[in-house]
Length: 362
View 1 (cartoon, helix red, strand yellow):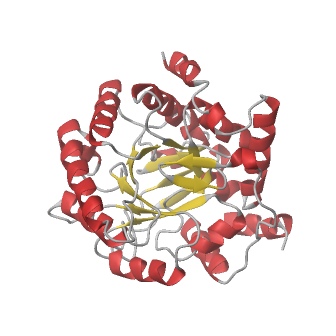
View 2 (cartoon, one colour):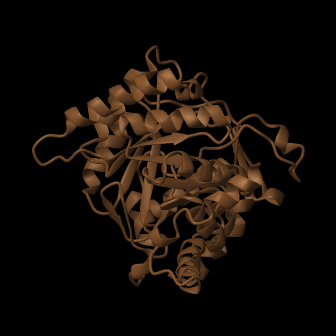
View 3 (cartoon, one colour):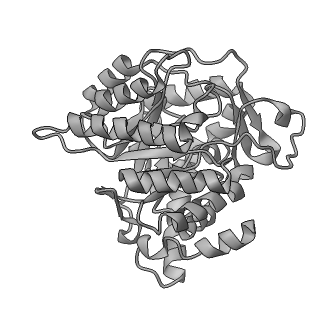
């Protein structure tokens, strides 16, 4: 099946309820109804980051495959990696519906899903059945009613270390009360200390020490971002994902829907998240690999993220509006843009425009 034929379903998916469309997409992927990449990626797109070799820098962000149902299908489409979750210790229904809203005129989404997922045990069982092919990250969070948030993260790291290529500590969702407070300097330091200790304890025999990444929000002040950078460097975190959705509301065409509570993702998030990315690249002196997320819906926007400081990029909302053909298009354009600029690898482009983005913020 070609990418163009598969994308014929896109208008239908955009016409039905957003959660229903998501469920249909998961079912299609689970049944093998999806395009498959037929040729290897060009060498210029290969990336090595936090000890892993990625065939290309484009990943599926957490939030799509919450329960680890279609990881292999996502890789076969052409993603260089896929991140599942967010997964919590216990199964969780999430917030009441409706909780997902398309802002079509803005190419954006607002969600207040609230970490709806099947819980550690069910997701772990699925990942154990799939084997270890390709790079799969597991994004872990805390249950809404947990009395010990840090213990939930420790439990997630311990549970998924045997099956994940890397682990992401998600402290940046705006839809779980109190979660973002874990990004404050002292609480983040305590969290990372315990999470990294759990990661190290899980490594034994043939099981390596899994990279641990931190996913942050784009709504931080300059001081808060400096604190995150300082703690991340001091604790030796392996990577940082910039960023989750925003609770801010830039001017939007869908003014009525913009009033919905939740995190805004998609095209309107691009500038804010990219400025935060560039700032963190400078604050960490390029010594911690960064994954750029937020508003990527073309090869040029993915390239902008890379030049702002990202070694890898992820998307989700862009796929809702662009269809799966967007994966191949972004990779094709990335290879072209690297060649245009006389660069032989993604790594050569990382951070070249960081200062430009910082000047725009000032």
